[in-house]
Image (cartoon, rainbow, N blue to C red; front, side, top):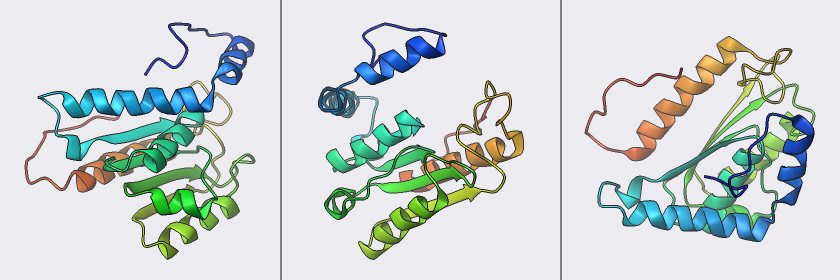
Length: 178
């Protein structure tokens, strides 16, 4: 999804400006519109649509799970998590959470609190916290924090989770993470 109206940058300062310019309500409306677009396509089974994101995008993926009850699955990679019980109660999608133990922005205590709330609410949740990994550990451009083994495992875990969430007997062939 293009959340920035076609604007792109490799400059971290400009990227932060673009991120700060996002308006939550419009962004969620755009995500819901994307869901509707996919759900109406003849080549898409609307019962098997998932959201997936990293960092801010992970938070948006789980926000879509709160706002779109038809979403089948959600994968949040070190993104902010909801703490509001009403929001958690609204999640009908299966949720996979992938986090790093050294993430200062989303510490394991918050991740485990989310997991407990989801479980208490009877929601489907699978959380993996990688030891010796911080925020953005799956990003190879993160020269100091990239953890290739953890990233490969997170990719495999994601593919397996999405296949299980699909609950389909059809085989879709081999998948690659890279």
